[in-house]
Length: 104
Image (tube, rainbow, N blue to C red; front, top):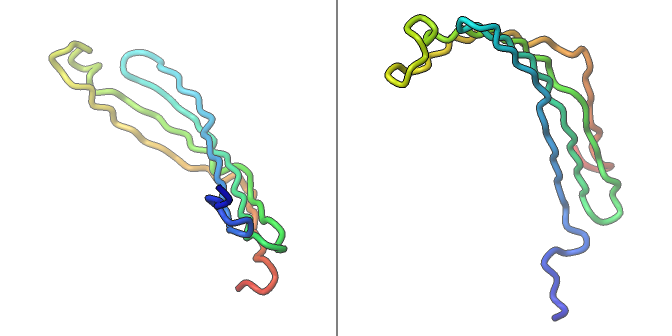
């Protein structure tokens, strides 16, 4: 047929996000983790208006954990109950998107 699913001038929003992370278990129930989120956001309003893009890194997170199961032994009869303490560290970078002309 000649019908289209999406009009040619329809607005689209695309988002791609990921988290890079590393975790290390020290034994005896102790662990540490660090993670860094990153992403890209693209908005295409359609028509003659240019696309807008934002991208970059998020705040670094550092976390320490202790699993209470280490106190009674990790067996099937007892649950794993982790205690976690974390800290978010700002990356120091900020981005600001601009609106298309005529948009507030």
